[in-house]
Length: 282
Image (cartoon, rainbow, N blue to C red):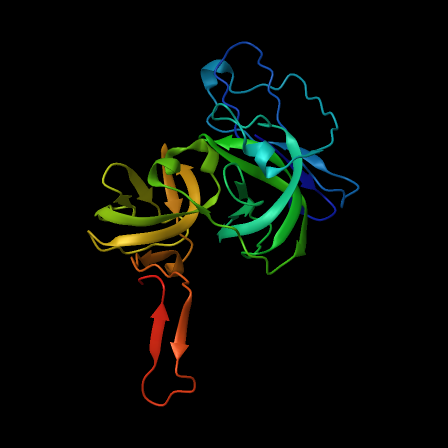
């Protein structure tokens, strides 16, 4: 793996992912890093681990650096794919959106709502809050088939206090790649399996199931109770999960619907009783 040490500021950029090499022949490895321009001098750092003595550990024959520029890309275009990997995998991009959820060392950003509108950002150098509008440059990576943005630089908080749009989905939608990273809501889903040793539990609608994770917030459900659950759609340990952000994201389902109907109320003013006359039952 590699990173950049920015000598003047005494800071390191985030490391790239490890490249696994198991060969006695020369192998070309390409990695992408993003650094800001706050330092006049810097160093490239190569980090290795678990080398093999029978293969002479690890030898570096040559090291070539080329300078490129990041491309401005929307979240939709970063996420949209007909396979599992982003079409921008391994490339530097510039993007931005509204922060929809945060956890230690990472956060999610979203632009609009619906499929392909959100993405996970691995970034321990910045600490935004939900509702911040941010822009930055980063490298697109696939972490065990989860599309993420990493090696964040040129981070700017444009403004704050924005609302984040929630996308209503059904349980089968939760299995789709298109909702990965999107702030979603499932309604009237029943707790069918209580939390396991990882504090993850399962909800269902009688036919399909969806796992509720504890990556951001640990919830304690009641078996057989129906819930409305809001959270970012995540993919880890080969499973799609909805990740609630707080207690407010896990509420007991209320079957009462509110509907405005045309009616009249009299007398006005009234002292003891009023009569409500409506043309529709309700």
